Length: 426
Image (cartoon, rainbow, N blue to C red; front, side, top):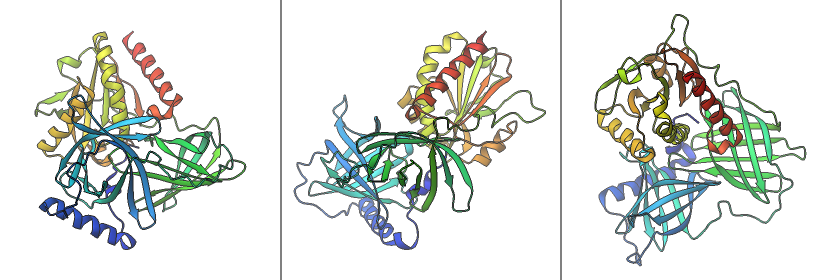
């Protein structure tokens, strides 16, 4: 939701220490090539459906499902399944009794040991920094949460006004969208910063569970509901939990995303000067942007909501650039060294066929973004999208991005986006 997910690769203190130690020991074995040999793996094939389990801490398991299948070059590739989405995770490589999945979009990696046809290992960053997260996977299991057979007490499909409360008591308004078919539940939560994408789970009695994973960090929600449909629950992470409550509200809405970020008094235009992957400085004063409508997308390659925006913007630009339109993205990354930035931006470009300029803005920190773009009153969310008219004036600024998992909210954004572009082109 436009927030860095580093914490999801960490194991909390105390109760999770033994899990962290186990993960670290196995990571060391993998790095040294000393993973314990397993028998019967010579003919092992990873192809097929799998159910994974992250161990956040003792007693807290987060399930996810994925499929490994051969791509067009006959190379195994992993796809995560969440709700109605199949998200391309990365290529799969088997070495001896170990299986590796390069989650390049998030610069992460799944490292498994193969034993008796099952997988056990860790989720870690590709540069091996940070604390790994333990994970296991079992073959040919297509369910996410194992159902107990307890029938749902009611159908909780609908739109909800949600309030999340942090440990310090700070409240955040959200919109929850739930769709239930029998015991199966899909959902998403819309925030000012963006949505929680595709969540999938089950309803049993008066309780529900939801989870999701696409390669950055696992998401896990658990809750219950009353006969009147009031919700209460927790969003559980590796380092703690955030409570939420909700009530049915067909008209639930967030603050206007076009009124949250704006130019400071005294500024009439937005400008910048940042390098591209080749080190060449790019500015809105450059000839290619002159007398054109320009969309500036501020984000990061690590950000799931930014990925959703890129999946929309990249093909949209190809279809519309001949109309006198340019797009430029300013990416704020986990590291700022040129080799890392070149790697992450090139991966993003290749995956989504990006044909507009991608620039390196700096470190992925909201305060750093605000400091590097002093004309903005604040910076609240990755992504933030700026609409600039032919004369270089800022027409609108959109904070956050609610993607395809949000249904009509996403369709409304596309409609508003195209209407604004049509207006600026007149």
